[in-house]
Length: 331
Ligand code: CP
Ligand code: NVA
Image (cartoon, rainbow, N blue to C red; front, side, top):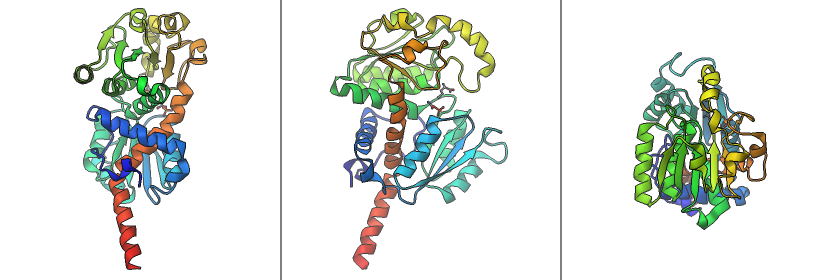
């Protein structure tokens, strides 16, 4: 059995990367690389395992990559479209958790309230993965940083990573993880749209522990100067549609365009979680330009999440392997 899976993984769920160490994240990357290089080797790893996908919001990437990801590993997925009403409306979230754990081995939930995905994890005995909440998007940050880890290899530590735009869920998960890998992080947001204070505190502690810098600026040109990677996300996240116009005015100077990218290193990568809005947070020239790695990231959602599924289910995989050995010995 692959080393990464035979050693116990120290987390039951993936709600937030705040509690995951740099080593935990690198373990995901190591397994993701192995799975990407030789998918056939892992095709029965999660044979018979079932995944529930419960989504309160739209999704292309997260839904497809988890559904296909568990199928690649021999398992199956069931999707529950919860876009018509909030979790907790028809029955309580704890009751939902206690039903689901009887049928499935792992749950992925995309919720408005972060509290709801946490509550599922508190009440379900099976692992729960945050597929995006209003506060965090940990699966996205893993794929983003896995992509940089692939591109830069051992040169990653010490590079300058700049996030420009709204201090939102994607930004928060990047802040939780990037300093732990040795990236110097700068976040540029308009005043009033800064990242959550607690997330910044946690990122500051990680940055000081890992000997890297963490800066916040309200000047995107200054922030991007010398950057090795520039990241942006939508200005109005799902659930903030009625603020779209107001935000377009506030974020006008935070558009990632060729002039802004000219402040970064010549070969700086452009990154975005997608979906993107050309002409708003990013211009078409940058998004579709030669330094854009947005589709590499989208592909890596699949590989990184397969690794997460395998690591969170590693104790179940070991129990199955033991059972097979016992059955084999008794046959
Ligand atoms: N980046 C991302 O999470 O995409 P979806 O909203 O399509 O899942
Ligand atoms: N911040 C965006 C990310 C979408 C993947 C949102 O929450 O809508």
